[in-house]
Amino acid sequence: MPVYKADEMKATPDVKNPNVLMKQFGGDLIKVGIVTYKTGETPPPHYHPNDEQWVFMLEGRVAHLLGDEIITIGPGDLVHIPRNTVHGIRILESPCRFFTCKSPAGSGQLSEDYTDIPNKDEILQRLAEVS
Image 1 (tube, one colour):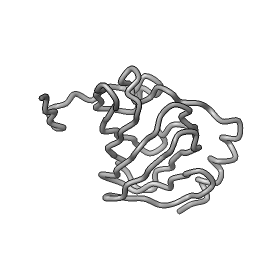
Image 2: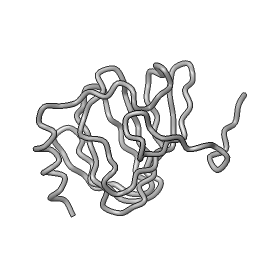
Image 3: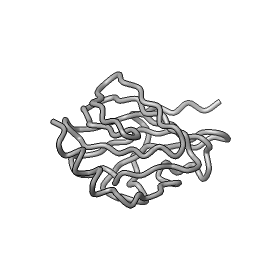
Image 4: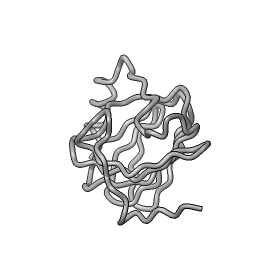
């Protein structure tokens, strides 16, 4: 069985946002990775019609939109993002680093199955109001 050591894994740029670094692997049923964002480098609010996602915060603090609610999360917090749930983040303390897993595995790329939303500017404004 393979063992992946995080400090030995190569961080590669995300295919959707090359400024974001990901250490990611895909299995038969799930894809996982460690994602690092710098301030201002987060993806726009979106949802995943085919993927369920979990996020475990390792470093930093973010305002996290989950459906209609905005919560502040930091190291040690675990967030479940069901399929079709609009979500997005704004970094409050950087660096922002988290472990994430998504199912199904698909191609193994964490950034697949992103669906843009029509009111993303409104949601970004709501996130900007959180301190």
